[in-house]
Picture 1 (spheres, rainbow, N blue to C red):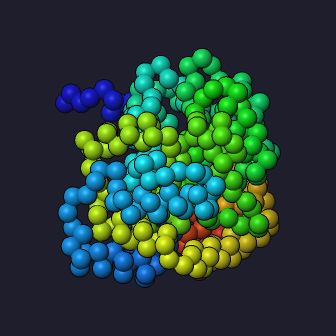
Picture 2 (picture 1 turned 90 degrees about the vertical axis):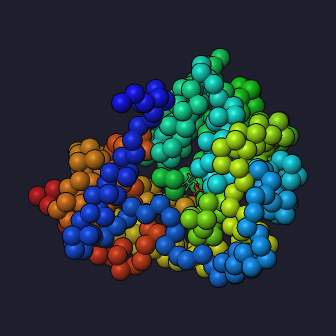
Picture 3 (picture 1 turned 60 degrees about the vertical axis):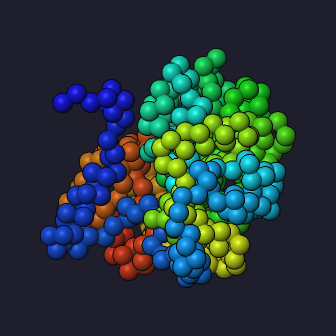
Length: 389
Ligand SMILES: *Cc1c(COP(=O)(O)O)cnc(C)c1O
């Protein structure tokens, strides 16, 4: 069958392959400990659910403006001013079907054949694929465990060519959990301005921070960088709203208008009553966020302590998100083979680092209960012992 060439340009998801295998094993009745979740294991807080139910009762069931409900655009602009010191008004905001669609719309609006997009690795799986779908060329910049998986200003400078259009900057990071310090963010911003490129700040994990880590929005560094920044974020990770599909893009009006025009011909507005849940998320108490964060913090501490006792793993302590990204370099196995063995013989599901452009690492999500974490780590320790003997 003849399919469009663009389909061949994108790779099938490696993460889904492991996930599908783990689910099939579970369905066969095997006791699988899964660390593969990319979403919070909590239910959406009740007040957010109530707000969406109330919106349904009030008949918020029709088409709305493609760019989003005015009330939500305004709540997002206020949040960005209040929490991030980013001076946006509602016209700078596009409400999207999640952070994923906001990035997709942005790539479609800004990238064309010949454009290069800088992507530090390890990266979120969809970044390079979205760039390719838009016809651009992803330029992967590898980082090391020793550098805590952070790209340096020198590396960025070296990677820039006359074709470079933008940098994708994700802090806190999925998959590594690393958070750039305010000073590091300022140094990256300096290169972006000096090289006259754009930066897309994926800040979807900004509220999930540990050990006093601070999040600085790169666009808040100064007026010059602000003009070259587009923020992509959403409600999924902070408020356990992954299935709701609400996110946003914030940036200069011409960029937002272009992305809105594309969205108006693809998905139109985001589910109207879901947007009312999102309004409640921003306009109500943030205690629910603190509660989820403290549950994550407890699991993270436990995992770090266990990792320190395991031989063969090196894991810089993550300061954000809900992932650990240990290096398995000492074991001397590729990440896919390691994760296959871990799943097939020890019944533990983890995501091979190769999916994120880092074949010597694996990703373990702690968005799962303590019992699973304890049992899963015991089994991981057994695999490492078996491999060493
Ligand atoms: C989960 C995630 C997103 C987008 O999530 P949505 O569910 O589409 O809002 C974007 N970037 C990163 C790094 C993520 O982990």
